[in-house]
Image (cartoon, rainbow, N blue to C red; front, side, top):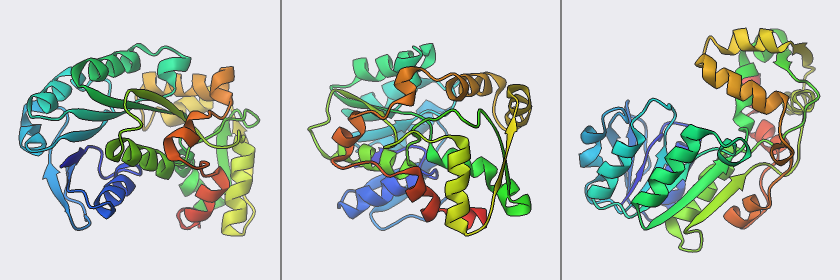
Length: 271
């Protein structure tokens, strides 16, 4: 049995589908019920209540762990899973754990790697799906407003993160590995806008924001500390953050999908 947290998201959903297609039984943890494939059951759980997750972990030997909020009790979640018999954890971390030595991320990674005998840590860079933040303005005004229009980064398709997670949960060759995951080519926000325009078959204008303007807008949906870290990463990326990582092909066994691939597959969100 494999437990998948974050099962309603753009990583969790394809991961559940991949695991069940491989014949695995899956417990999909989320707060609200979701449509699930055969061989998957839903468990209404909250990561803020680790003891309440005990029934989800019972009988499971593997866990995909995604912790979206630094305030969540990571050590208690991991201890509850381990005590229930989970021996392998695939952790969704972030490239910032290495490139910026983020203390929350490095602490979370250490908690997992010291708790269970089998582990894999996935460190994705920026998600291609972050472009969905532009969907409403593209649909309504055919305009993208974003900062740092000419700073190029290699965004990772969440479908590739799900594929890497599935491989790490199903195969033994990825044990004890840290994988930096990103896309095959660095692209700027202007180039991403052009790719979306091509995907929907219409013109989309790009309007560059200042950092302050972007901070004000993003702070409406994310905590200020998260916004600051995000703007640092996309505005003044390190050389490592700007460069496609060979780890991605090692984790996937193939080349990663491009931002153009992602835009074409998600064109309806922008129409």
